[in-house]
Length: 141
Image (cartoon, rainbow, N blue to C red; front, top):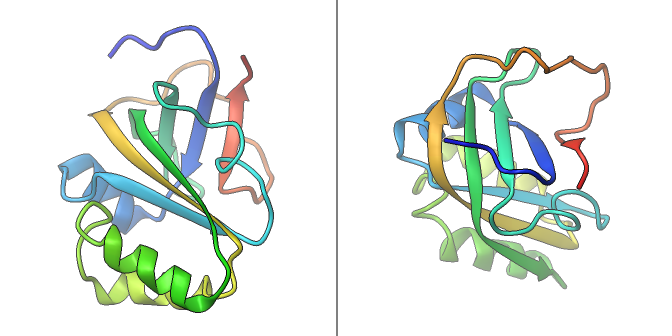
C-alpha cells in the first residue's frame, strides 16, 4: 500500500483484536468515548491508519473506509451499535462483551470500516510515545 500525503493515524488495539483485523475476520474498529476526541473528530475516509498493540510495535496498516459517527443518548444506543455492526466488528464474541459493557455510558461512537489492511514491519520513522491515548495523530495534515 502506498500511503498518500495527509494525516496519518495510529490506533492502539488489543492484541487479540489486532490479530483478527490482520487475518480479515474483523473489518471494522469501534471507538466509544464520553468526549469528542480522535477518531470521532479528525478521521476521514481515505486516511491512513497504522495499527499496533499496547506496548508493542506497529504491525499493520489500513485505510479508513466509511467512517460512521454517532451521538449516543442511552445504553440502549450502545447496544444497538453492537448489534448493527457485530459482523464487521468480529461477530458475537464474549471477549468483546466486556468492552461494550464498559462503554454503556459513552456519548460518542466512531465505527471505522478498515480497507486495504496489510501486515507490515514497523516503519523506521515511528517513535514510541509514553501517553495513554488509544488513538493518536502521528502526522497532521
